[in-house]
Amino acid sequence: MSRACLALLGALFVQAGAAAPVHAADLTVGAFGGVWEEALRSCIVAPFEKQTGKTVDVVLGAPLQWLNQIAANPDAPPFDVVFAPTETAYQMIDKGLVLPFSGQPVAGLADIYPDMVSFAEGYGVVFTYGAMGVIYNSRTVKVPIRTWDDFYDAVERGEITAAIPSIHYPGSLGSSLWNVTRVSGGDERNAQPGLDRVKRMMAGGSLEFWADHNQVLNALGSGEIDAAMYWDGRSRAFIIDGNNPDFEYVTPSPGGPATFNWIQVVKKADPSAWTFVTIALGAEGQSCFASKTHYGSVNMKAVFDPAVKGALTRHEDLSIPSFREINRSRQAWLEAWNKQIGR
Image 1 (cartoon, rainbow, N blue to C red):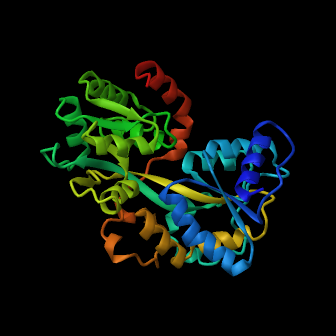
Image 2 (cartoon, rainbow, N blue to C red):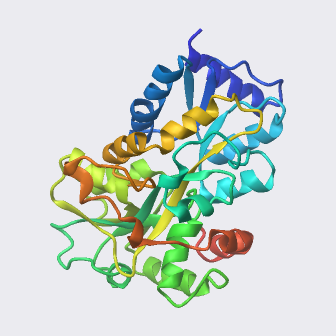
């Protein structure tokens, strides 16, 4: 039976409440799909396997699913390392499912932007970052988008058809809703100005919501929508690697709401997990991963492919929400969204 089949069976057993799965490899890593997975395999997994002689299973899925699987079997968790967005990573910490980085053999932490280390509260490190900006078709969007008000106002007036993340898309609380809230006069404690603006955009009949990042690019390519609030890395890959020169990506003023993907080590992990982390955060691994995905690097010594260097969102251009505060408002925001927006 293949390693992939064993990993899938293991996940199913955990979901069903059965005994812990048999690992198909020395290290099991929860990660994301698409270009993210491809870059992880070539930039991190391959060097790790070459250096250690150990094997890695990369299991794709949803971070919240991984959290539930780990919590169901904390003494024999189905993962050693997970990549998780901030909101899930904080839940991993609060549930006591991950190991602290202090005192562990992780080389090169001094080369990581200090806020990307301290942000993770000692139970992980930000592995890569992205920012939400706007990707748009320059043939149909006649007035260039420079600010978030440019984008939201054009949708309100019905001048463009656009898509923004649904609140049910992982991470959208700290990106989509928080962003429209902050530029509309609200904050982490008061999302009503943002909800009101979303309702105004809906009233114009030009707003759609997305919960699957793949559907956005399909809708842009088919002409179904003119623009979308979307991730920087995937946007630039669509434009550059996908040969779509009619599209442009911009991080509107006053800045793109940041999203972070952390790397965390699960309790009871194989000790080689720390070698995997070192490679993932090292300058070589970070240079490779950022160049392939067009997402930002947290290593200050990373050197990028000249073809994409100018397209990467700079660390200093990030606009960082108060994720802890947003987590405290999570339930109220979800209830308000479901009641007032319903999509």
